[in-house]
Image (tube, rainbow, N blue to C red):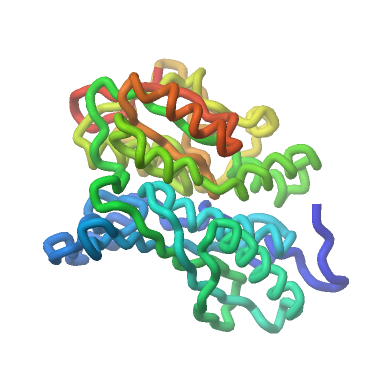
Length: 351
C-alpha cells in the first residue's frame, strides 16, 4: 500500500470514481452519440466507431495501417507512480486489441494543482512514461489542465498491417472464446477504497493492471483469430455483447469457467462491489439470458468493471491451443476458455 506526502489527501479521495469504472454507462453513451455522424465512408478509414471497437484505424499504404485511440480516468490506487502505470497500460491495450504495435503516445493530464504536490504529479507522469517506454511507444507530448479531480491517460498511436487488423466484428459460428486475464479488478478497487484489500490482493491487482496486452500483436498473425476486444469498464458481459452485436452472432458463457481472482470472489461474497456493476447490468441485461437462480454475486462479477483488463478472443477451435500458448508466453497465465460463439440473434447466454 502507499502513504503519500504528509497532509496530502489520498489520490482516490480526490475523485468520485476510479479507473474504468468512471466510464459513462454504455446505454447512456449510446444515446449521447446517437446523432453523431460516423466517418466510415471516408476513404482510407478502415475502422470507426460504428461497431464500438477499441480504436480507429486508417490505412496509410498497402502495408501500413495507423491505429489511434485514447483513454484516461481518475485514480484507481493511491500510489501516484502505479496510477500512472495502470492508466498507460490500459490505454495501450486498445492498440494491442487491434493487433497493433504501439509507436508513440501523448499524455492527457488534468490535476487539482491546489490539492496535489508537484512531486506527486511528477510521479504519475513518470509511471505512465515508464510503461510507454517499455511498450516502445515513448511519450512525445500531450496536454494539461488544472481540473477539479485528478485525471491521467494517454493518446496511443500504433501500426499494423491493413489485412491483419483485429476487430470486435468477425466472430463466427463455432468459435471458442478465450479471456486473457481474470476478473475482479473493480471489486479490488472498491475494497481498496474501503480499506478492506490486503497486501496480497493489492499486489495481485497491480500485477494484473500493469501487465501489457502484448499477446494481441502475435494473435494478429495467428490464423483462425476472428474477433478481439479488451474487457474494461463495461465488464465481461458488456464487451462480449459488443462482439455479438458487431458480428451478428450469439455467445454462450460457461459461468464456472470464467477466471476470477480468488480474493475478489471472497470480497464479492462479503458484499464488496462497485456501483458500476449494477449500471453495467442494467445496460446489458436486455441481451442476456441468465440461468434460473443466478446469484447477484455472480452477476456482479461478470459485470464488474475491469481496469486494464484482459483481451477477449473469438477464435476457431484449431487456434485455441496456440492462442493460450501466446498468452502464457507473455505472462498471462490466467488466460482461459470461457465459452463459444453460435449462429443466431445477438445475445449472450450464461450457463
